[in-house]
Length: 93
Image 1 (spheres, rainbow, N blue to C red):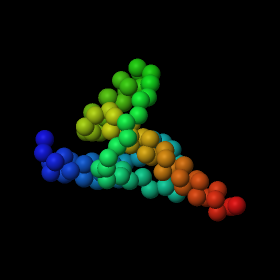
Image 2 (spheres, rainbow, N blue to C red):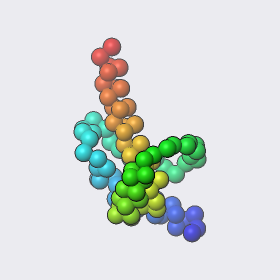
Image 3 (cartoon, one colour):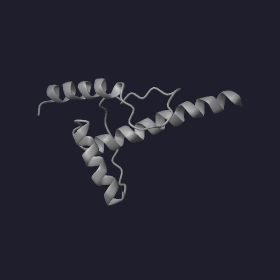
Image 4 (tube, one colour):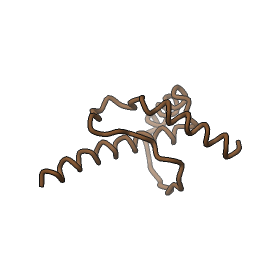
């Protein structure tokens, strides 16, 4: 896969997921946008086998490159939701 084709696919995924809520969470005050392709920091995480199995199935349904991309989207969505909550709390104090 060439870099140009990969970047185009990422843009297509971003367009598809921009209007797609990944969870039932209330994100009224948060706009979730997957960040541009940047250098990533490697982390090691232990997950239940069932969570990995379901993530793989969901990633395939969403036409993502793999389940780790789906997990990054879930993490990013949660961080953006909590960032909005943090901003609201900071305004109160």
